[in-house]
Image (cartoon, rainbow, N blue to C red; front, side, top):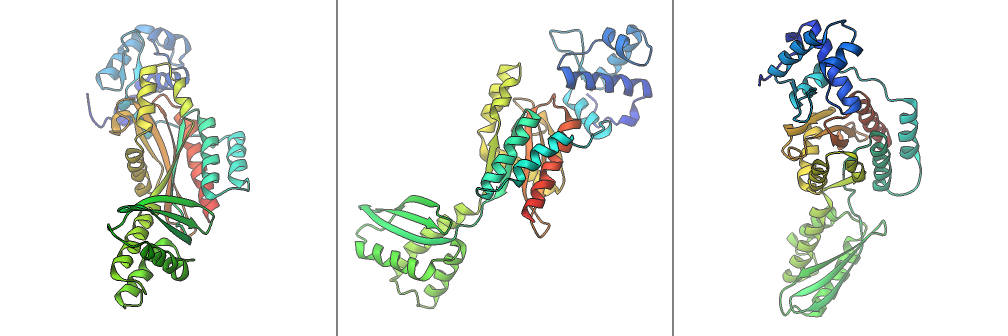
Length: 345
Protein backbone atom coordinates (compact mmCIF):
# COMPACT_ATOMS: atom_id res chain seq x y z
CA UNK A 1 0.00 0.00 0.00
CA UNK A 2 1.25 3.44 -0.86
CA UNK A 3 1.05 6.03 1.89
CA UNK A 4 0.08 9.63 1.29
CA UNK A 5 -1.41 9.30 -2.20
CA UNK A 6 -2.45 12.71 -3.54
CA UNK A 7 -5.26 13.47 -5.95
CA UNK A 8 -2.65 15.17 -8.11
CA UNK A 9 -0.96 11.80 -8.63
CA UNK A 10 -4.03 10.53 -10.49
CA UNK A 11 -4.70 11.46 -14.09
CA UNK A 12 -8.12 12.77 -15.11
CA UNK A 13 -9.38 9.35 -16.19
CA UNK A 14 -8.33 7.71 -12.93
CA UNK A 15 -9.85 10.55 -10.86
CA UNK A 16 -13.16 10.31 -12.69
CA UNK A 17 -13.39 6.53 -12.36
CA UNK A 18 -12.36 6.65 -8.71
CA UNK A 19 -14.92 9.38 -7.94
CA UNK A 20 -17.67 7.43 -9.74
CA UNK A 21 -16.86 4.30 -7.73
CA UNK A 22 -16.86 6.15 -4.42
CA UNK A 23 -20.07 8.06 -5.20
CA UNK A 24 -21.84 4.85 -6.23
CA UNK A 25 -20.61 2.91 -3.21
CA UNK A 26 -21.54 5.61 -0.70
CA UNK A 27 -25.01 5.77 -2.23
CA UNK A 28 -25.75 2.05 -2.62
CA UNK A 29 -23.26 0.20 -0.44
CA UNK A 30 -22.74 -2.21 -3.32
CA UNK A 31 -19.33 -2.99 -4.89
CA UNK A 32 -18.95 -1.35 -8.29
CA UNK A 33 -17.87 -3.30 -11.36
CA UNK A 34 -16.26 -2.13 -14.61
CA UNK A 35 -19.28 -3.17 -16.65
CA UNK A 36 -21.55 -0.94 -14.56
CA UNK A 37 -19.20 2.02 -14.97
CA UNK A 38 -18.92 1.50 -18.72
CA UNK A 39 -22.72 1.75 -19.02
CA UNK A 40 -23.34 4.60 -16.58
CA UNK A 41 -20.08 6.60 -16.60
CA UNK A 42 -19.48 9.57 -18.84
CA UNK A 43 -16.06 8.57 -20.19
CA UNK A 44 -17.29 6.37 -23.04
CA UNK A 45 -14.69 3.72 -22.17
CA UNK A 46 -14.90 -0.03 -22.57
CA UNK A 47 -15.23 -2.28 -19.55
CA UNK A 48 -11.73 -3.59 -20.24
CA UNK A 49 -10.20 -0.09 -20.18
CA UNK A 50 -12.02 0.75 -16.97
CA UNK A 51 -10.89 -2.56 -15.46
CA UNK A 52 -7.26 -1.62 -16.12
CA UNK A 53 -7.65 1.71 -14.34
CA UNK A 54 -9.40 -0.01 -11.43
CA UNK A 55 -6.46 -2.39 -11.18
CA UNK A 56 -4.07 0.58 -10.98
CA UNK A 57 -6.20 2.18 -8.26
CA UNK A 58 -6.21 -1.09 -6.34
CA UNK A 59 -2.40 -1.28 -6.53
CA UNK A 60 -2.27 2.24 -5.09
CA UNK A 61 -4.31 1.03 -2.12
CA UNK A 62 -7.37 3.13 -2.98
CA UNK A 63 -9.71 0.27 -3.98
CA UNK A 64 -10.21 -3.30 -2.86
CA UNK A 65 -12.27 -6.27 -4.00
CA UNK A 66 -14.58 -7.87 -1.42
CA UNK A 67 -14.37 -11.65 -1.44
CA UNK A 68 -17.97 -12.06 -2.51
CA UNK A 69 -17.90 -9.75 -5.51
CA UNK A 70 -15.95 -8.97 -8.64
CA UNK A 71 -16.68 -5.27 -8.06
CA UNK A 72 -14.51 -2.81 -6.12
CA UNK A 73 -15.10 -0.66 -3.06
CA UNK A 74 -12.95 2.18 -1.72
CA UNK A 75 -10.51 1.34 1.05
CA UNK A 76 -10.25 3.52 4.15
CA UNK A 77 -7.24 5.16 2.51
CA UNK A 78 -9.34 5.74 -0.59
CA UNK A 79 -12.13 7.30 1.45
CA UNK A 80 -9.60 9.58 3.13
CA UNK A 81 -8.33 10.70 -0.28
CA UNK A 82 -11.90 11.31 -1.45
CA UNK A 83 -12.92 13.27 1.65
CA UNK A 84 -9.78 15.40 1.74
CA UNK A 85 -9.31 16.08 -1.95
CA UNK A 86 -12.40 15.35 -4.03
CA UNK A 87 -15.59 15.68 -2.00
CA UNK A 88 -17.83 18.63 -2.73
CA UNK A 89 -19.88 19.28 0.39
CA UNK A 90 -23.19 21.01 -0.11
CA UNK A 91 -25.02 23.31 2.28
CA UNK A 92 -27.47 21.54 4.61
CA UNK A 93 -30.91 21.25 3.07
CA UNK A 94 -33.69 23.60 4.18
CA UNK A 95 -35.47 20.64 5.81
CA UNK A 96 -32.36 19.62 7.76
CA UNK A 97 -31.79 23.20 8.93
CA UNK A 98 -35.41 23.57 10.00
CA UNK A 99 -35.35 20.33 12.01
CA UNK A 100 -32.16 21.25 13.87
CA UNK A 101 -33.31 24.83 14.47
CA UNK A 102 -36.66 23.67 15.85
CA UNK A 103 -35.07 21.58 18.62
CA UNK A 104 -32.31 24.05 19.45
CA UNK A 105 -34.87 26.87 19.79
CA UNK A 106 -37.51 24.89 21.70
CA UNK A 107 -37.84 26.21 25.23
CA UNK A 108 -38.05 24.10 28.33
CA UNK A 109 -35.65 21.85 30.17
CA UNK A 110 -32.03 22.20 31.17
CA UNK A 111 -29.10 22.80 28.86
CA UNK A 112 -28.45 19.07 28.96
CA UNK A 113 -32.02 18.48 27.75
CA UNK A 114 -31.53 20.87 24.82
CA UNK A 115 -28.26 19.18 23.88
CA UNK A 116 -29.93 15.79 24.08
CA UNK A 117 -32.85 16.84 21.87
CA UNK A 118 -30.59 18.46 19.29
CA UNK A 119 -28.35 15.40 19.21
CA UNK A 120 -31.36 13.13 18.72
CA UNK A 121 -32.45 15.17 15.69
CA UNK A 122 -28.94 15.03 14.22
CA UNK A 123 -28.94 11.26 14.73
CA UNK A 124 -32.23 10.87 12.91
CA UNK A 125 -31.20 13.07 10.00
CA UNK A 126 -27.84 11.33 9.54
CA UNK A 127 -29.23 7.86 10.33
CA UNK A 128 -26.24 7.33 12.63
CA UNK A 129 -25.50 7.36 16.31
CA UNK A 130 -24.86 10.95 17.40
CA UNK A 131 -22.90 12.25 20.35
CA UNK A 132 -22.34 15.54 22.13
CA UNK A 133 -19.77 16.31 24.81
CA UNK A 134 -20.27 19.40 26.91
CA UNK A 135 -18.83 20.77 30.14
CA UNK A 136 -20.93 19.85 33.13
CA UNK A 137 -22.49 22.92 34.69
CA UNK A 138 -21.07 23.58 38.14
CA UNK A 139 -23.32 22.52 40.98
CA UNK A 140 -24.28 25.35 43.32
CA UNK A 141 -24.65 24.03 46.86
CA UNK A 142 -27.97 24.62 48.60
CA UNK A 143 -27.95 22.04 51.36
CA UNK A 144 -25.94 19.10 52.66
CA UNK A 145 -27.38 16.37 54.89
CA UNK A 146 -25.14 13.82 56.64
CA UNK A 147 -26.68 10.65 58.02
CA UNK A 148 -24.63 8.08 60.02
CA UNK A 149 -24.87 4.55 58.57
CA UNK A 150 -22.83 2.67 61.13
CA UNK A 151 -19.17 2.12 61.79
CA UNK A 152 -16.98 4.06 59.39
CA UNK A 153 -19.73 5.18 56.96
CA UNK A 154 -22.16 8.03 56.47
CA UNK A 155 -24.69 8.94 53.78
CA UNK A 156 -24.13 12.38 52.30
CA UNK A 157 -27.09 13.94 50.46
CA UNK A 158 -26.18 17.01 48.44
CA UNK A 159 -29.00 19.27 47.23
CA UNK A 160 -28.12 21.71 44.45
CA UNK A 161 -29.63 25.13 43.91
CA UNK A 162 -31.28 23.77 40.74
CA UNK A 163 -33.09 21.09 42.77
CA UNK A 164 -30.74 18.28 41.79
CA UNK A 165 -30.03 15.68 44.46
CA UNK A 166 -26.97 13.46 44.65
CA UNK A 167 -26.37 10.75 47.23
CA UNK A 168 -23.03 9.29 48.19
CA UNK A 169 -21.80 6.92 50.87
CA UNK A 170 -18.72 8.45 52.51
CA UNK A 171 -16.02 6.82 54.59
CA UNK A 172 -15.67 8.51 57.99
CA UNK A 173 -13.19 7.83 60.78
CA UNK A 174 -14.33 5.01 63.06
CA UNK A 175 -15.64 6.30 66.33
CA UNK A 176 -16.56 9.70 64.88
CA UNK A 177 -19.38 10.97 67.11
CA UNK A 178 -22.72 11.69 65.47
CA UNK A 179 -22.45 15.26 66.79
CA UNK A 180 -19.46 15.77 64.49
CA UNK A 181 -21.59 14.95 61.44
CA UNK A 182 -24.30 17.30 62.65
CA UNK A 183 -21.70 20.02 63.27
CA UNK A 184 -20.26 19.54 59.77
CA UNK A 185 -23.71 19.64 58.20
CA UNK A 186 -24.67 22.83 60.02
CA UNK A 187 -21.37 24.49 59.10
CA UNK A 188 -21.76 23.71 55.40
CA UNK A 189 -25.37 24.85 55.29
CA UNK A 190 -24.68 28.00 57.27
CA UNK A 191 -21.37 29.10 55.72
CA UNK A 192 -21.10 27.53 52.27
CA UNK A 193 -24.65 27.45 50.90
CA UNK A 194 -25.02 29.41 47.65
CA UNK A 195 -21.44 28.71 46.49
CA UNK A 196 -20.31 26.40 43.72
CA UNK A 197 -18.63 23.27 45.02
CA UNK A 198 -15.22 24.53 43.90
CA UNK A 199 -15.77 27.86 45.66
CA UNK A 200 -17.06 26.09 48.78
CA UNK A 201 -13.88 24.00 48.95
CA UNK A 202 -11.75 27.12 48.47
CA UNK A 203 -13.57 29.01 51.25
CA UNK A 204 -13.36 26.05 53.62
CA UNK A 205 -9.60 25.70 53.05
CA UNK A 206 -9.15 29.44 53.58
CA UNK A 207 -11.05 29.32 56.85
CA UNK A 208 -9.18 26.22 57.99
CA UNK A 209 -5.89 27.94 57.28
CA UNK A 210 -7.00 30.93 59.33
CA UNK A 211 -8.47 28.77 62.12
CA UNK A 212 -11.89 30.30 61.43
CA UNK A 213 -13.65 27.12 60.33
CA UNK A 214 -15.48 26.64 63.65
CA UNK A 215 -14.81 22.92 63.23
CA UNK A 216 -12.26 20.61 64.80
CA UNK A 217 -9.52 19.47 62.42
CA UNK A 218 -10.95 15.96 61.93
CA UNK A 219 -14.43 17.21 61.00
CA UNK A 220 -13.04 19.99 58.79
CA UNK A 221 -10.93 17.51 56.84
CA UNK A 222 -13.97 15.26 56.43
CA UNK A 223 -16.02 18.11 54.93
CA UNK A 224 -13.15 19.24 52.71
CA UNK A 225 -12.56 15.75 51.28
CA UNK A 226 -16.27 15.23 50.60
CA UNK A 227 -16.78 18.56 48.85
CA UNK A 228 -13.54 18.20 46.89
CA UNK A 229 -14.63 14.78 45.67
CA UNK A 230 -18.00 16.12 44.51
CA UNK A 231 -16.34 19.13 42.89
CA UNK A 232 -14.00 16.85 40.94
CA UNK A 233 -16.93 14.78 39.67
CA UNK A 234 -18.86 17.85 38.57
CA UNK A 235 -15.99 19.19 36.46
CA UNK A 236 -15.93 16.28 34.01
CA UNK A 237 -17.67 16.45 30.63
CA UNK A 238 -21.26 15.38 30.05
CA UNK A 239 -21.36 12.80 27.28
CA UNK A 240 -24.73 12.26 25.57
CA UNK A 241 -25.12 9.48 22.98
CA UNK A 242 -28.33 9.18 20.95
CA UNK A 243 -29.58 6.97 18.14
CA UNK A 244 -27.64 3.77 18.84
CA UNK A 245 -30.51 1.88 17.18
CA UNK A 246 -29.44 3.33 13.80
CA UNK A 247 -26.29 1.22 14.10
CA UNK A 248 -28.42 -1.89 13.57
CA UNK A 249 -29.29 -0.68 10.07
CA UNK A 250 -25.86 -1.95 9.01
CA UNK A 251 -26.32 -5.22 7.12
CA UNK A 252 -23.10 -6.50 8.71
CA UNK A 253 -24.41 -7.52 12.13
CA UNK A 254 -20.96 -8.39 13.50
CA UNK A 255 -19.77 -4.88 12.68
CA UNK A 256 -22.92 -3.36 14.17
CA UNK A 257 -22.44 -5.38 17.35
CA UNK A 258 -18.81 -4.25 17.56
CA UNK A 259 -19.84 -0.60 17.17
CA UNK A 260 -22.45 -0.87 19.91
CA UNK A 261 -19.80 -2.29 22.24
CA UNK A 262 -17.41 0.51 21.28
CA UNK A 263 -20.05 3.15 22.02
CA UNK A 264 -20.21 1.83 25.59
CA UNK A 265 -16.58 2.83 26.15
CA UNK A 266 -17.48 6.32 27.28
CA UNK A 267 -13.99 7.20 28.50
CA UNK A 268 -12.37 6.32 25.18
CA UNK A 269 -15.15 8.12 23.30
CA UNK A 270 -14.63 11.26 25.39
CA UNK A 271 -10.90 11.16 24.64
CA UNK A 272 -11.57 10.80 20.92
CA UNK A 273 -13.95 13.77 20.92
CA UNK A 274 -11.34 15.76 22.80
CA UNK A 275 -9.10 15.43 19.72
CA UNK A 276 -11.77 17.27 17.71
CA UNK A 277 -12.11 19.78 20.54
CA UNK A 278 -8.41 20.64 20.57
CA UNK A 279 -8.23 20.71 16.76
CA UNK A 280 -10.51 23.77 16.84
CA UNK A 281 -12.28 22.69 13.61
CA UNK A 282 -14.40 19.88 12.17
CA UNK A 283 -12.59 16.55 12.11
CA UNK A 284 -13.29 13.35 10.19
CA UNK A 285 -11.92 10.06 11.52
CA UNK A 286 -12.23 7.07 9.19
CA UNK A 287 -12.10 3.47 10.39
CA UNK A 288 -8.78 2.35 11.81
CA UNK A 289 -7.57 5.96 12.08
CA UNK A 290 -9.04 5.73 15.58
CA UNK A 291 -8.15 2.95 17.98
CA UNK A 292 -11.65 2.99 19.44
CA UNK A 293 -13.48 2.27 16.18
CA UNK A 294 -10.85 0.11 14.48
CA UNK A 295 -12.79 -3.11 15.09
CA UNK A 296 -16.11 -1.96 13.63
CA UNK A 297 -14.49 0.13 10.90
CA UNK A 298 -16.67 3.13 11.69
CA UNK A 299 -16.30 6.80 10.83
CA UNK A 300 -16.65 9.78 13.15
CA UNK A 301 -17.50 13.31 12.01
CA UNK A 302 -17.15 15.77 14.88
CA UNK A 303 -17.11 19.56 15.19
CA UNK A 304 -16.43 21.79 18.21
CA UNK A 305 -18.87 24.42 19.43
CA UNK A 306 -18.09 27.55 21.41
CA UNK A 307 -19.25 29.51 24.41
CA UNK A 308 -20.02 33.20 24.74
CA UNK A 309 -16.31 34.07 24.93
CA UNK A 310 -15.57 32.28 21.64
CA UNK A 311 -13.64 29.47 23.30
CA UNK A 312 -14.39 25.84 22.43
CA UNK A 313 -16.47 24.26 25.20
CA UNK A 314 -17.82 21.07 23.61
CA UNK A 315 -18.05 18.78 20.60
CA UNK A 316 -20.97 17.39 18.59
CA UNK A 317 -20.78 14.66 15.98
CA UNK A 318 -22.05 11.46 14.40
CA UNK A 319 -20.71 7.90 14.37
CA UNK A 320 -21.61 5.45 11.65
CA UNK A 321 -20.27 3.10 9.01
CA UNK A 322 -17.45 4.28 6.77
CA UNK A 323 -20.06 4.23 3.99
CA UNK A 324 -21.49 7.58 5.09
CA UNK A 325 -22.86 10.23 2.80
CA UNK A 326 -20.00 12.53 3.81
CA UNK A 327 -21.02 15.34 1.45
CA UNK A 328 -24.39 15.61 3.22
CA UNK A 329 -23.44 14.72 6.80
CA UNK A 330 -20.33 16.91 7.11
CA UNK A 331 -22.18 20.23 6.57
CA UNK A 332 -25.03 18.94 8.76
CA UNK A 333 -22.65 18.37 11.69
CA UNK A 334 -20.94 21.70 11.04
CA UNK A 335 -24.29 23.52 11.05
CA UNK A 336 -25.32 21.81 14.31
CA UNK A 337 -22.06 22.90 15.96
CA UNK A 338 -22.59 26.48 14.79
CA UNK A 339 -26.19 26.40 16.07
CA UNK A 340 -25.03 25.18 19.49
CA UNK A 341 -22.45 27.97 19.52
CA UNK A 342 -25.23 30.51 18.96
CA UNK A 343 -27.23 28.84 21.71
CA UNK A 344 -24.34 29.27 24.16
CA UNK A 345 -23.65 32.90 23.21
